[in-house]
Image 1: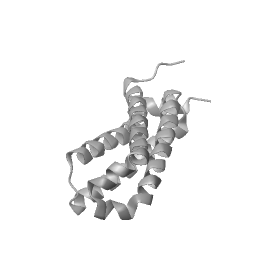
Image 2 (image 1 turned 90 degrees about the horizontal axis):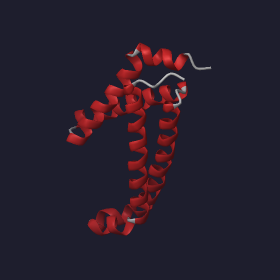
Image 3 (image 1 turned 30 degrees about the horizontal axis):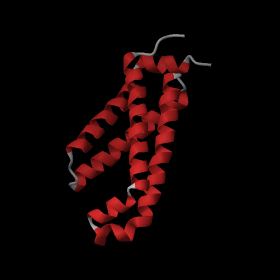
Length: 135
């Protein structure tokens, strides 16, 4: 079996990292709901049910990101297409946030990383050949 290119291995690690952070955020939203509500009660008390919903949503995203990372490591083409799609979606959302004036250095970092991942998968011939040779 041919070794993974370093860039592809790095992208898989980023998806593992995303999986871990999404899990932590989901658990915090589920079990830290009262702490979140106590930060600004007039605002968060009306959204307490949504906090739980988003907790479960982030846990689901965590599980999905883990499987994408694992499939990227195993050179599955569906994972490559999924990574391209999510990266493009993140870039579009990031640009819309920047246009609307929601500016954050973290957002710029996410935007740049997503654009890099999308470009890497879209433009790198070696990676495309690696995924298409699988049977």
